[in-house]
Amino acid sequence: MLTDYYTELHEKDTKNQRSFLCDTLGLPCGFFRKNIGQACFTAVLFLLGFQASFAQEVDIGGYVKELGQISINNDFSTLHYDNILHHRIESDWTLSDHFEFRADLRTRLLNGYTVNNTPAIEQFYEQDPNYFDLSWIWFHNNRSLMHSNIDRMHLSYINGPWEVHAGRQRVNWGRTMAWNPNDLFNNYAFLDFDYEERPGVDALTAQYNWSYASSSQVGIRLGDNWNESVIAALVRTSWKNYDIQIIGGHYLDNLTLGTGWAGYLGDAGFKGEISYFHPENQFFKHSGHVNATAGFDYMLQNGVYLQGELLYNGGYNQRGNPLNTLVQPPSADNLFIAKSGFLFNGSYQIHPLVNGNISFMGSFDRSIFIAIPQITFSVTEDIDLLLLSQLLKGSVFKQAVQTPNLFFFRLTWSY
Image 1 (cartoon, rainbow, N blue to C red):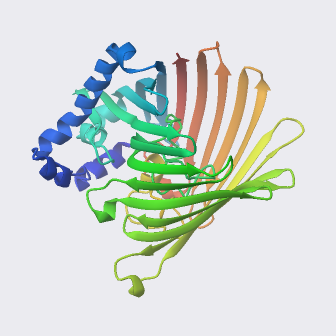
Image 2 (image 1 turned 60 degrees about the horizontal axis):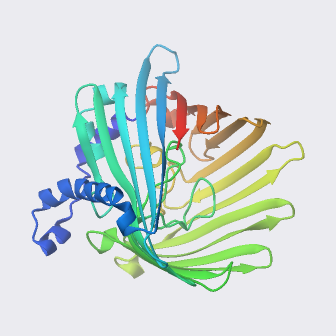
Image 3 (image 1 turned 90 degrees about the vertical axis):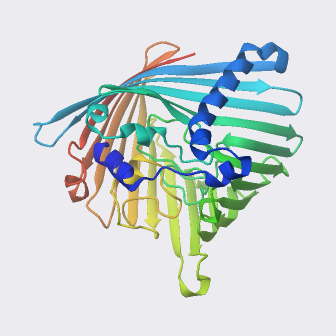
């Protein structure tokens, strides 16, 4: 499924450059980019080895996953197999009464059709979309690729109502399930089901909590230049039975202003987000656009949990591979491969140890339909088995995806 996408990224040479930082520190840019990830990894291992000397308390956890993927074309004449062995380690350090440190490392060993048939696939995995390059390749040959990246590494200061976080972190401003026009810092791809933690971003954030339900937050996402940075603020409060937020600031090359909410209409949950984006360049000569989502969720008496979400994607841009915003985090001003989108989801606890779920995603203005059935088994207290399919239908996928019927099995051991 992803072979053409990786090739396109390689041909466009989208690997970020960090020339500004390199010039500032007097380092060769290539040296800096190739070594900072390994250096941070080595530093974390060093601190782990001497954890008793540096921290009052250290919590270590993580998981190991085995993920297999079978992809088949519509007439069942072509079958491809991919496999990922995935290890994640998570660490939380209590350094003092007010300081905490977090560092998480994910390492994946990939093999199968995509690795064997994608030119320069290592360049896609080696690149880091954030300001600092914390991603690297251990090795790559014709059959396998081993990749690591640090997706959380930040220092936190917490003192009463104040919170300050510096480093790679998750800045969560989204309210809805699949599409988040309010998430200016680190949007995520809904179809990337194997990344439950979701991406982090190199940022500095400060938050002041007025009360349990009210707070204000300011965030700065680092970028090579003004058009790759984000500087925004959020104010969140409650009104009747709704949590409401207002956001605004500089987003890449746009000024943005938006709002989001989460509450209830009767017994049904009601959430939504609206953001307006206006180009900063030649401000009065260009018009802006609106992205908006609205979602409902409801629990039936028989235990079936239903969710629905609608999207208006005013920033839709048809150029490029239609898979980009499905398999990689989209930008907040262009969230989907169509101008409109819908998602319907239903889940049911079949047994205390078995959960079933099915989702349908599509569009009203383009020929797109994606069915996502899945079932999860709790094998033991620490081991889960997931069976999931992603069936891509519609004319949009006919030329873009050679094998649009995807079947996954995943075994996870958590520790």
